[in-house]
Amino acid sequence: MHLEKLELTNYRNYGGATFEFSPDVNIIIGGNAQGKTNILEAVYFLSAGNSHRAGSDALLVKQGENLASIRSEVDRDGRRLSLEVFISMNEKKRIKVGGVEKYRFSDLLGNLHAVIFSPEDLQIVKGGPERRRAFLDDTIVQISPTYHYWRRKYDRVLRQRNILLKTMNRNVDIESLELWDRNLAEVGTKVIVNRIHVTERLSQLSAEAHKKITKGAETLELNYICRVSEGGVEGPQEIERRFIKELIRRRKEELDRKITLVGPHRDDLMMNINGLDVRSFGSQGQQRTVALSLKFGQMKLIEQEVKAKPLLLLDDVMSELDEDRQSYLMQMVRDGNQVFITATHLDSFAPADVAGHNIMRIKGGKLVD
Amino acid sequence: MYATPISELIDELSKLPGIGPKSAQRLAFHILKTNRAEAERLAEAIVHLKDKVKFCPVCYNVTDEPVCEYCRDSRRDDSVICVVEEPKDIVAMERTGEFQGRYHVLGAAISPIDGVGPEDLRIKELLKRLEDGRVVEIIVATNPNIEGEATAMYLTKLIRPLGLRITRLASGLPVGGDLEYADEVTLGSALRGRREMP
Image (tube, one colour):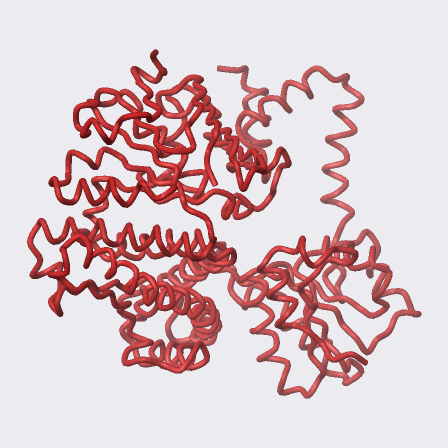
């Protein structure tokens, strides 16, 4: 699987630009704010259906324009497939797969797989629990065709239930609340089950990467922290049953605070090194390494699940890493994946790492020769 | 800024669902360009709609008769009521030609986001229709989204004690479709809702 061609129109700082890529390593060189990351972001968008950094799609449309597009040609085992995304300021985004318009956005997912490494990855470890939930969700979306549906449905149920809690008369509307309890538990259980399953796999794969990077000194372990599956449970029915029970137990508190307090939107991912919580006890260097290990785990998991090597998007990470981790990274990425690396200068690479690769230079939203 | 009559029309049009300020502006100028007779026909059609069309007092379908055509039709089966969210859902059901019973229109689905609770639906009216014991089956044909499902759940809870048969429209594979082209969510739903071969 690799990306052959990318065409950006009114996307971020690109008015119109076409890029052709090598199936091996592509190095994108340019100064700050010239548009290097925007290329990686667009590639990632094709795989995940959202930007890895912008909260709103409207931010992706070039200032003063109405419609942005990302068009691409992907090679899948020798078969060419075009993927196109149209992002409008005032309408829903549209997609075309193989030239055919698809009405469900989730039809885009699963056609191209990519893992992005960026300086912001550190926030998965250091940031709030929402960063870790997003990391899990972004991983699952790439390997499970139905997860996007359930995840969106959960958001919708949660919103309905929160609005009900804010507007309801607590003496008469309890029956209505119970209706949404059942919905929340049913859909929430799907989310929890997927996250538990993926955490188990990620834990193993990230631990393997972590062991290699630290030369065997550290053992990384991941645990999905979820109130309704605490202490281990016997499958989805048991989780759903405990979910309902927990909603009843905390009903008074929910009514007082007028917000949903039970469910996967409150869960977290715990990361331990040699049994200690990295968030509280890890050094800055350890936290950085854990972030890197998580991404390698994600990469391996996608590779195993889709039986193809995902694209690796390395956004300005060379400057962040010490020599050991840099060399480990370069060694890992020379494994047959198509790689995209951005950097401000070519001399941030060891000469051997650059030889024979496709080098592109970017300035002010344009490709320069 | 436009002259007052134009901006008034634009304001009114942009209150319609699916019409943004730009579309409203385009429509307003289109109407301005048409001849007077055509504009009058449009205005009349709107007023007629409000004057003539009423809700059927039995099923709450829209009708310009005292009672709607489906409630009037004596050949239809009184023992089954199909419950839908909106009058347009009746039209969809009728296109199938498969259903010969009666209808009941709830008017909406339960949705706190839109400020719609169970008390805003025509549920009391439905329960009243069940009192004489002629109805033996309720088909819940609300939409297969979370609001429609919540509404179906609520209705079921309310009607179950009456001892009627309560059914829900199946969701799953499109007829004439191939399994391999079905999306995973639809196929999963079809699998969960599978039935015994007769």
